[in-house]
Image 1 (cartoon, rainbow, N blue to C red):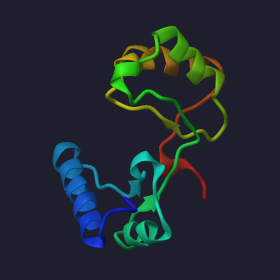
Image 2 (cartoon, rainbow, N blue to C red; image 1 turned 180 degrees about the vertical axis):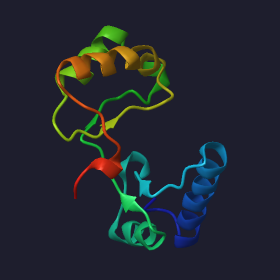
Image 3 (tube, one colour; image 1 turned 60 degrees about the vertical axis):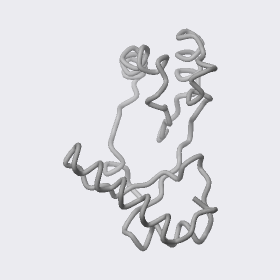
Amino acid sequence: MPDLSEEEIRKEVLDLHTTIYNKFNYEMKYIRPPKGEFSERTLKITNSLGYKTVMWSFAYEDWNEDKQPNEEEAKKKILDNLHNGEIMLLHGNSKTNTNILDSVIKEAKNMGYVFKSLDEFKE
């Protein structure tokens, strides 16, 4: 987003907001900058639109559809890096993630972790 004009940022964010609302009846209030790229200017713009910027504390190269890790490697990487307060970034275009997500959630819960929405975190 840092390379976009204020008008382009507003359009992208508000178009996304409208799409999410129309498909899921959900009013967005959080935003994750694409690729984690932001600037003071982009934060100011998204904040002025009413969004709170949230980053992740765990991610791995799952976004690249040409370099998908095998399921066991991915699962191990995710589970080995679990930590309290984690905000996990997993990309929906990853077939590996789709295949392992259910078992990752079950194993994390068996390890004593709980899953909460951002609204449930204390500031």
